[in-house]
Length: 421
Image (tube, rainbow, N blue to C red):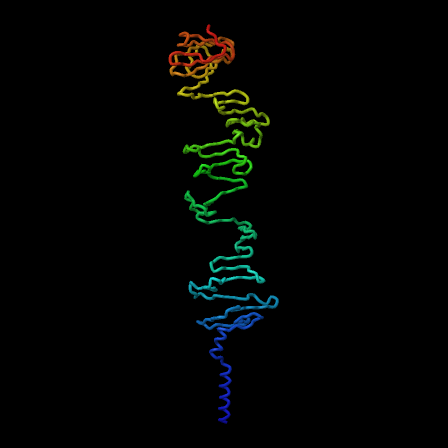
């Protein structure tokens, strides 16, 4: 009986030694050598079985093979038979603040740390430099997408009711410069190059044009090209700090002021030799295109003209050397005339008799004109060059006389129909 028991124990020990893995066997399981899984060289195959790692322990897989995959996780479930192929759950509340649920680390510059493929083609790649590549569009969970057209363009598309909000400080487009006006808020936008706008542009506040070169200006064009069919420019005047210059198109030289409602109407002005400003009435030019006042210089004189009607002065007009042009409508008798300005006299109701005293400043000019006749207009002029006094008579409509003070006497410099009774 003792001999049988001893034999039984001996056989059990030998069987246990055969079943307990050796250290080398354990190393081959944790540090496996290449094998073949599904026709591919692979050191380790993990079957879909539940395995647990004891508390305070870790599982390390190390491979020194020169080619092939290190770990392959593969599952071919039946219909609706699998939820996740790989599930990593960092559970509990005792993790260190610097812990990564999943960390991929490499010290080889030729390794791409992370890649996702679909049918052997890259869908997403994260490079060791931190750069990322996505072969398709990126849809954001909160709404909106980043879209790639394949031609190098990128479209940022907010959600259906969302806005595109940039929060740079400031927001910058281009890298050729930096703000010189203190842009420092996330509502500010700096563009280092040119800006082209095809649609209507609204400015709810002011617009500043600050010139750092002689070509900086506000150019108004009719064909969309920088130097094409230019209507004119608004720009700082060269050599005169603070001055503003408005230039008109060569050969056209026409500036028109009119009501906004007539902005698409033809005012029928021809091209001008010299820059000319036209001011139109509120009448539609299709009804009457002659109701304008123009201002120009014909290279000899300043020219103030109208398309219809006269030029009327309703107030004092300053002249050179401090003199004024006073338009004075006279209908009363026994008038003492000012020694400057224009006196327009109506004698249809009664004769007009007036006096003009000696002048007060060399070069001052006074003009008398008969607007409506019917009775005599007699002007007694003191210190007239031919007599002191001299009486000048106007008795027919549109007769007139112009006198200039030469410092001593009144000298007639122009006239039409005047007599000396």
